[in-house]
Amino acid sequence: MNSKKFSEWSAAFAGLCACVLISAVQAQTVLKLGWTTSDGATDPYAVGARAFKEALEKTSGGSIQVQLYPNRQLGDEKQIMEGVRFGTVDAGIITNAVIAQIEPAFQINDLPFLFSSEAQAQKVLDGKLGEQLAGMLAKKNILLLGYMEGGFRQMINNKKPVGVPDDVKGVKYRVMQNPIYIEMFNSLGGAAVPMAWGETFTAVQQGTIDGLEIPVAVIDGSKMYEVTKFLSLTNHTYSVIELIISKRAFDKLTPDQKKAVVEAGKIATAQQRATAAANEKSLLAGLEKKGMKVNSVGDVSAFRKAVQPIYDKARKDVGDPLVSQALDAVK
Image 1: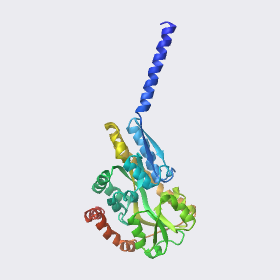
Image 2 (image 1 turned 180 degrees about the vertical axis):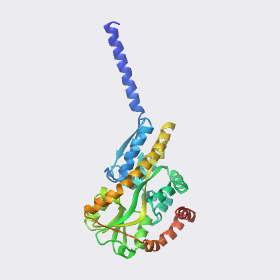
Image 3 (image 1 turned 180 degrees about the horizontal axis):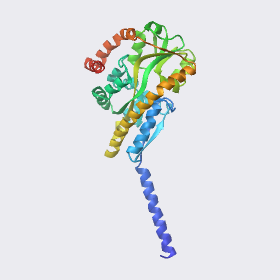
Image 4 (image 1 turned 120 degrees about the horizontal axis):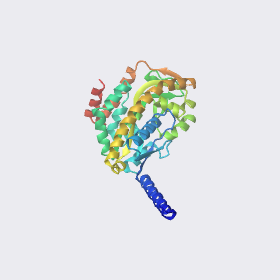
């Protein structure tokens, strides 16, 4: 082969390689995943997001790339959820109470003192009740890929430790914009202040509110220990955080990619739950070292009695069969 022909052959081969490379890049699907908390190593939302990214990029054989957007980069939770619903946001990890704003049946997961342990909650959510709820959400164009774990929610404030219901009285608690949480704190005698997450740190810092209720991992990740003093382990609500994807985005995928997404959701949920559980013990010890005064709540029977009207109202709002199904599942 003379030098001229070799040069022509080399140029043609290089052009072919470039076309193949461009086609491969163009063929890769990008999914944008958002959440509102930090991207810290122990933040439960971030842990779930990273686990999903790793799992999906592997199960899809690299045909799907997941881009992560923490710290409200895609908006507050309601904005992300609405974006997922209408297809302007591909995916998100959203607090259950916010999901309940669009599908009220999800209020069941937030019923106070419903679950006695993480294992019990996971069993129920991975079972018939969880499947039923996911089916309802799918009708709103939001597909549920996994019930991840935020951990049990705890009360923190700057007024006093909480050991009995009377300790909640007169204390202003930030709550999510969700009827269950508003009614819970009002029924315990507190002053429930519905507020978006992005406004909360400053509100506590300035004394507009006295405290709030969030899982241990989020207390640490959001640095709430800098502005609150008392942490009471009330375990009042098991915090479910849902991994969701837009039906519009999902429908654009190939059959193989759809299978990869579903599989990755299961893998990531299992990993996230295990990591969240392992992190909580060390995080709690760390919060004490950072100055928070931590107390346990031994007997929750008085709390359960005080919040009973919430169950009665839930039966009317989401239907007696669903509430009864949930109560039967935790017996």
